[in-house]
Image (cartoon, rainbow, N blue to C red; front, top):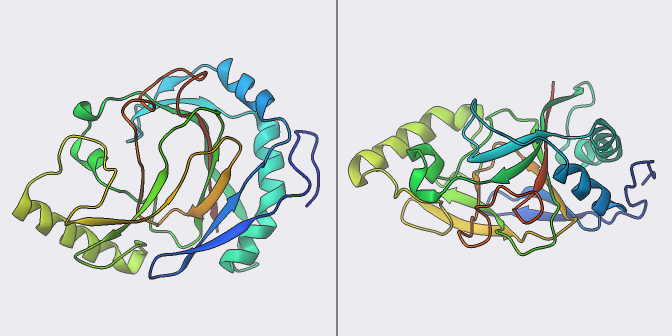
Length: 236
């Protein structure tokens, strides 16, 4: 793959994992950036603010434009190929930010205590780049047990929400804590360990959650927290 001034590894070796029963491709790329220390230092100098408009339980800061440009220019051909995105659709970045978790589990809203999906759109993708070297919680992927769904498409969306609500009506709200393991509502079937300079790409309609480790991950410091660079893109 082509080398860029930002410092992306020009010998990337993407690994494709087919997740779960639905065999959804997940892309894992280790050693993504040649200068992860520069990206880490940039994050440490950034102005992190609470996320007041969404359900992310933490702080966000803008990503540097050269990082965004280099990352998307390098990886968009891989997205087209792996996910068979129709060639007439064009990439449109949606949300771009550094992220840190700083909210305690006992302060979460009910929807934050369940696995989630970003959108039901067919060609919406999340790029998640792990930055810090310390051990932190993995990214987990879940199956909704009552429906068997792993991805929530437009066609499945209403059925999924109705089924999940029936389960909650019968069994009560989820415990006020981060969702990190299987129960009788959701099955954790795959997880990607947090590893510095590992980048993963997955469809935004997959049910997923950060497997938050209370001891290491609830930390608003860009030096020691669970620091990620997040890029969300749509093709339309």
